[in-house]
Length: 174
Ligand SMILES: Cc1cc2nc3c(=O)[nH]c(=O)nc-3n(C[C@H](O)[C@H](O)[C@H](O)COP(=O)(O)O)c2cc1C
Image (tube, rainbow, N blue to C red; front, top):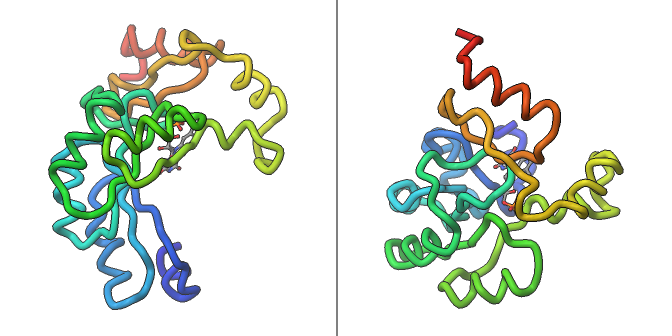
């Protein structure tokens, strides 16, 4: 997939999940802008050192997979802004213009939204029921799963997340 992105000369890539070094190296000498998704200050500093053009900082409020340090977007964003020279994009729990303004006030150059874009007409891959549940959700509607196996992720609470949490509690997959 990375080679295809290099061959196709994509203008921007987003790198996540583990050490970004091998992926960033493949884009050396290209015009592709390399963004690295980070969830901690040390990861942002590392990404800058490795040649990232910007970092996307995901706070604990974010949907999907998260960092292991449970640091909220409001705390993490200014910490990272103060620690790197490359542009910082704030992410996690942002879904409207108010969140954008707050992120800019914290020193971010922009925002990344994930969950909000799922509940759009253009997101044809998401089921309508899922979209409706996102729209109807409130601040109590999500839950953190898979923390016990080192890959915490925020998901909408449902029968599956209940079962996953139950298994995690019992550690019955061991
Ligand atoms: C269903 C879902 C799947 C996601 N999958 C990925 C992924 O494959 N790669 C990735 O870098 N981030 C992924 N994310 C995280 C987003 O890139 C983004 O960091 C996160 O959604 C930001 O928080 P927000 O959902 O509160 O806007 C996913 C998020 C969600 C909700």
